[in-house]
Length: 360
Image 1 (cartoon, helix red, strand yellow):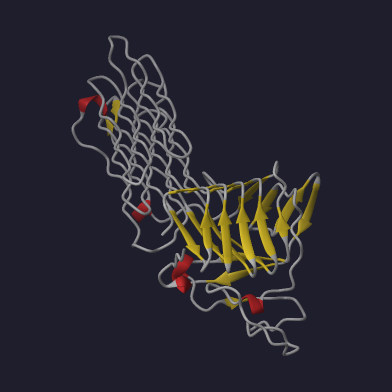
Image 2: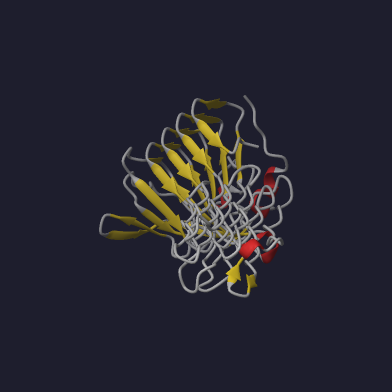
């Protein structure tokens, strides 16, 4: 099965890279090794010949930070060879790796300002969990795709809009029976791979925060990528309405981020997740709303004193659900966050697992 991403070099906004390399064995102009050895890049996105010599990534690594280039292994912090690639969409932190075979019980959390690429000259095997969900590396976007804040209507509050990515985010529910909903974030252009955006905050006292978006990750290997575990770039759920004056809207869900995998052979037996976060439930005058869940489910609204309730948060999905508008006296639910995008670039892709949303 062949799944190709249109315009591979436009993934994460990358054109021909401009790489700053301090290693003495490489040409800082990005033309490859100084010694003139022949080299063919194994990536359609970055020039792997311009990368510094790689190092193995320990199987039990628990954290990587794209701002520092440091991994966490037990109580130790170790530096990895990495460079920052300048792109039209911003910087991409590229880690040069020889081999990475992850332990089945390992959890690797990847954070930092920049999205991350693992460029592996050997085989990449993921048996545990790689986590860039809800604020992972590179998460965040401009206001175009971020859910709008809820609008305060006197003592009542509207739900925040869900963040947008591959689709517009779900609208926030109107608070206190207010008919106008706050808009979700706009969709990004078709085929563009962007890290996730945050949902809008809820209207009312405390302004409950929207969920954070998922991060951005590019995995490329010269031989094969084998995934028996989980890679998660899903969006976070919005906070529920709080009891600080009552009638508070829930925060909108954050969007799923971006995951791109490229290798001559890709075999999936695990799970890839770029779903959006659920919107938070609005509060009633006596009960807090429930927070939306990471990777899709909306939070329930707080129960009212007279069988009234705050609006339920919208579900993050391929077609994100709006938050439910509240009855008089209660807060509206936050809109669901949109899903991100997952791309598989390989002439030999075996899918024995699950991918949400389906790869594009």
